[in-house]
Image (cartoon, rainbow, N blue to C red; front, side, top):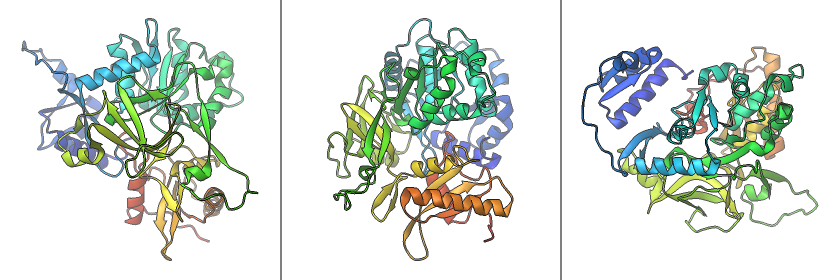
Length: 469
């Protein structure tokens, strides 16, 4: 589940090298692996054995607000993860903002399957409930991966369950697992779920609507959805929608998304729009600006890079001044995300570094991947889209697809269907490579790493299946 033992050991060693710890504690099931990673760097202990000993009587240190509370290893896609230095004051500011924006109150109860090594799981579903004295029921992440509907079963069985969070794919996989033969109204009770948080990846209106359509008979209300935007470098939350307003979208011309500035050549052609989800306004203590490539502040509905300043922003990447200077200046954090503002709310459209630019037109890889995922047999994380240079010297979209069939004829049909789908989106022929399952690389938080997939593909590290014509 970690993408292979060696890769996991290497990743832990990089983290240990960057933070220079005195000691490493790990659960029994991972101890042998973690001990290998710590060899020559620090002492490593099975935490069951360590905590079974007597606690010595010592004077505990008194932390200042500006001291580092912990290091959160961010999911940087183009490099090994960096330790985001989160101070006590930044953490407390974000926890307070989170409680304020979700209307956390006595009687609330959280249900979560999110891993604690990711900021949404750590801050949103462990530290926030702890600081606000809200009880939590935890479902192991691997159990959710095996049986996604167990998440909804746990919510249904607990009469106090009112808050739970997930990236888009969590809602997607649950809706897909419901067959017509399952009596949703009898099996689930989601009527008390008042905050269904959504963040950590692109929020897809189609997925959210499919979840509502599937689970409305169980009492789920569309108004429970709470879109948000955040990142580890801002502790967690940057924007959150008001409670009870659900998913709200803004329709924007796809030519605007693609960076087009010239007037439409043929006015007879229909205007194609894309629905962009409102991620809400800045949480208390933060200020947001959307700027162009020259750093100029942009007006409403103009796409640019998102900058954030205020309480909750990291002190920097631990012991990495170069990486810190690359994304922070005068207290402003360059998030690397592309978005636009409208009436004080933020609308995320994608990542700047992942953008595919073909003939001067911008294509968001998420859109290409999403379209292919709608073909039968695919799921989120099976596809990585990026640009490559063809032998003729032209830029073209390339798609790596994890393929589970060994039949050559089926692979041919699959490849052709993908090419047709991508051409319908981009208007261009694309390079389609079918690769073995579990081939595409992940970041430290489990997200697809497009940049690493591209690098591994171009270097020959990823070897596609041979598909006979």
